[in-house]
Image (cartoon, rainbow, N blue to C red; front, side, top):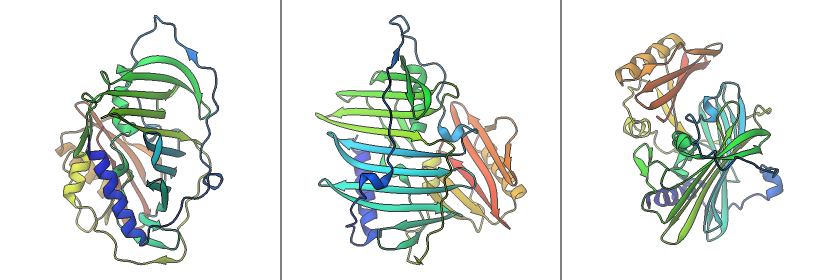
Length: 349
């Protein structure tokens, strides 16, 4: 159970190294446009309806009708914030604008990270620099993707309106919360004093709109919360100006990719690798047809079966779903630069 805290401490060190002085204070709340949730009267299910939560839940990434979204992530320890992340995400072409605030001794330090045109940028409040990798999943092992499989084990509490969506509120304690495997890391709540998982699933499309996970260990309570909102709102992520070139951290090694995905995926020669939000991005020197063939062959070799035909979402963009036993992996092949194609693979669920 100490691993998430060690991961967070490591990320703090990395951020301070990247930012130099590490003394940028968080922006005032009014400037951060944090999401608001309007409380409503919950429609409680009858006592007899103690049934489990139904089928597996989906993540917002798996819902084709949602093209953009914002996300608020908050990790707290004993009621005090440890990490706050604000995300603005565009699925196609992939772009993301993140604001990460870390707290040490109740003092906030904030950095901004953008991903656009297959390039990662980081800003410490003074300048933008190009970096090679910044994995938001390092902040917490608990993620919607990791908890989606728990939905059938949870009981239905009732219905609530969250982020403008009618949702089913599901809940369960440590007896039904499954162990989480996130790459080489794992989390089990069986020996905790207490734990609770709440999922709010969109009533129509069954994706996670909100997640709250709390854990009490050695008398201390830790909470992780994800909230998705502003679905399909206009989001523009722009390339920063006045970018300073610096010596970037090393590109993730194939062994790190293996640990994240949970299976081997051969990297085409001449490719550039990056990891963003537990998703591997491989910018290949291939055309779209070659990259698609490489993806299909590699996934078959890893024991996965392709589910249906790939969805052609736009010109030179194809969305795949693969399954192996109880695991589902999604992948996208797309090209925005002539002569280069990105293979984007989500961590195995």
